[in-house]
Image 1 (cartoon, helix red, strand yellow):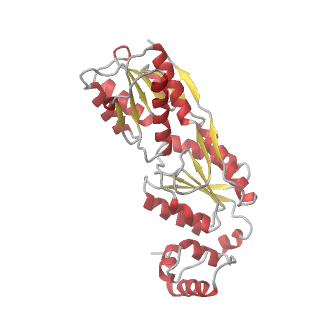
Image 2: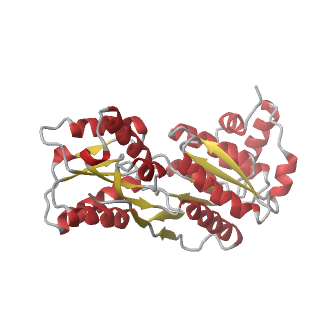
Image 3: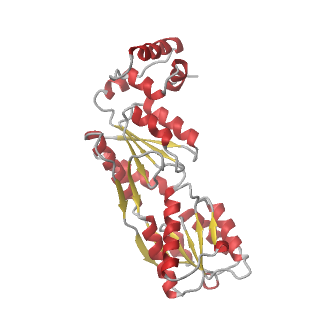
Length: 331
């Protein structure tokens, strides 16, 4: 098995970022630490990528993208937006899948340090981001896309989740003030928390009380949407309207309705976050909140290159893109 930069770091008793800085001959490293790292490199037989190291003195023209799920169309559309922008400037994109694991996020970050990337776009899997500090410690700037973290500050490109949901739920309530349920994602995700805030804001404005049995929290996956829609429909009095906070749970919810024999005209009115083609084709949704997905990737890449080119000490900025309300039908 090939020796990695992580193996060298463990042997030297330092971080992978410190090993990277020694390899790239960066200043600010104590001589004792530098000697320990060089000794560990020799003992372990680690082979330094001299091409990547020489490129690092200028640019490797390579950007990393860390994503929770490589099979997720939404995340891959973000990647496509980033790659199209970067490609026009002769940059390459390395995509890393983490399977929604903080441990894997750390591992992928270490690999990207080893690859001498110029910067990294990250779609975090939770609200924790302190482990990404190994990237900035190695002098590699970071931009978050779609989600924010609570314990690590960086530039970011997200959408106005709260207002998008507020507009959609308000639209539904204005036309029918009967109870409206909410199927949301884990509060560990910033976008899930913001979408729930939009739901609460709309109910408060219309004088409706939030009922615990009508607020169900899942995990943004298809099976979760199926399970939670089933739970709502098995209530003694099922809700007349349901807002679903992402496309995969929306798909799962529709899957349940179809399996249960519910037709569009005798199922709850559905509002959802993400513009799902299935909504229009099958006729279950009344309104959806469309995100500018490609633009998230494009602007994240652009913001990252600005951070690479300019002073790294400049204040971080969070760009919030606007969503678009799409109305399909109202019965």
